[in-house]
Image 1 (cartoon, rainbow, N blue to C red):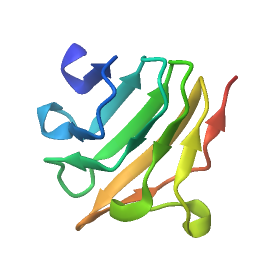
Image 2 (image 1 turned 180 degrees about the vertical axis):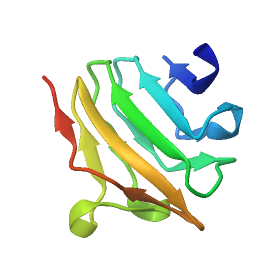
Image 3 (image 1 turned 60 degrees about the vertical axis):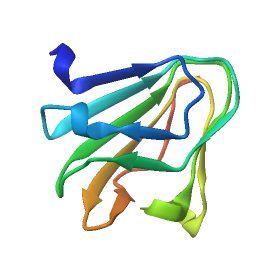
Image 4 (image 1 turned 135 degrees about the vertical axis):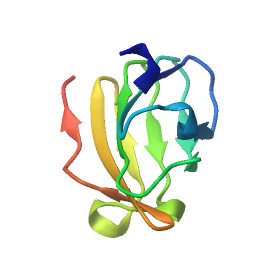
Length: 101
């Protein structure tokens, strides 16, 4: 369904996942610049967010609002995917980054 997909070719740092109508959402990043994503706003507990980098620039998921593997921000290279789950005020990395490049 198109309603659970966010797609962005804009070099933004915050994404409003409140526009997703389902508990599982997809964020496709398609621009070719390096960026750091600092937050996903408007989410609800239990929401699953799959972030896919289909651009050529590196996308860093900042750990300020997320518990990520290795206690560090996570870098998504082109074609990498990360799965996050919302619990309370934080996002939790649910699986290792899937490297598909």
